[in-house]
Length: 145
Image 1 (cartoon, rainbow, N blue to C red):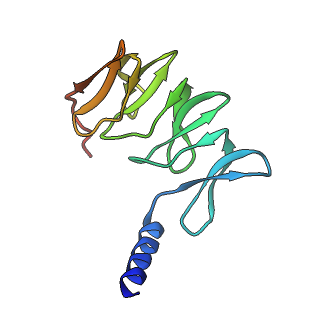
Image 2: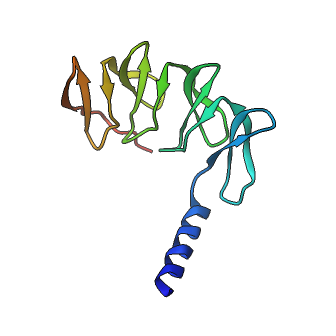
């Protein structure tokens, strides 16, 4: 009982400190973002929205995918056929029928030549080309503040 209560309390506290969460509005058939208290921070305006990762969230608008910041400002215009959350500074995007990787400015840093691609973990990502999987190692300079 005490362990369950402790876990519940920890999860609740973690959620209060969590970034924004996507939500669906039946009023206009769009997605927006709420904070942990349920307050709408970004009004529903997207066809679909994912969770935030590394300060950005993939969103779908007019059939294309891009990224917004926590104010709902589009920071990478929706030009991709598909997009995933950022992981270790890069995100998988689909250009046409192939996958590649972008940085947080939206610049393609690994060309979209792969049939499938997984998120980076450190400097490595699994990629598939011609039905053969391999591990890509990508060394890049991380952002400094």
